Image (cartoon, rainbow, N blue to C red):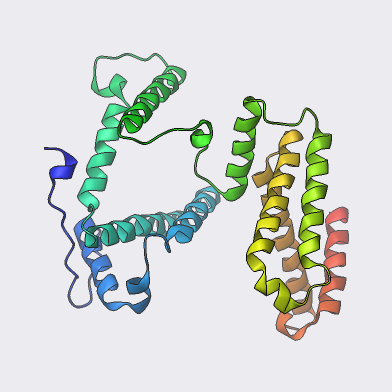
Length: 288
């Protein structure tokens, strides 16, 4: 029987206050209860949950890096919640349920590991990777046969906006759509920044808000152009941004620590004092 022949089952909400049993069916019933009785959960859609799924994946990555088992368990649970949440809503829509998702995954894993489940023999992980890519190509051809057309940039994987921006630029470059050197990328960055400034300069807050979608487009163009500069320098835009984020958090933490030492809360400080401590944090970095 194919997966599409399965009867879609919408989980029934658990009654009362449930125990933590560790069983998937009980988790599905708990999610059904939340969809029935929690105002926030009731108003969510598959599209509204997208940012949360991305966020949870990143938080899982940080937890794994921390090597803290409690954090890892918690973040794995949060990722699982996203899967369960989506499955509940798709089941409510009569499209598919959790068993369909699991069956699809099982079929894919078996299909992509013929060296495990069939007579094929692959000598090392490099050979496994080559075979994996061949099977994925076969799957893509099957998708195309179902009317799912493929264009050259479709191979760009899902990821953060910075990761996708850099990857799509790399793929376009392989097809000859690129500047020869970094100068063109820098000039493009200057051009995009000038266009953003044009949307903001001599404009009131109300005027900017009234034209916020155009401002958003120009801001996106600036970020995309900056990623292009990173690519031309063989730098990873995502890693560079994360370095900046960690640096900002460290300096802001220094501000909080210094204010606490003086018996103050950060809420009781002002921008002048915080800016002075920010500069002190930079000096502290140089000396340490």
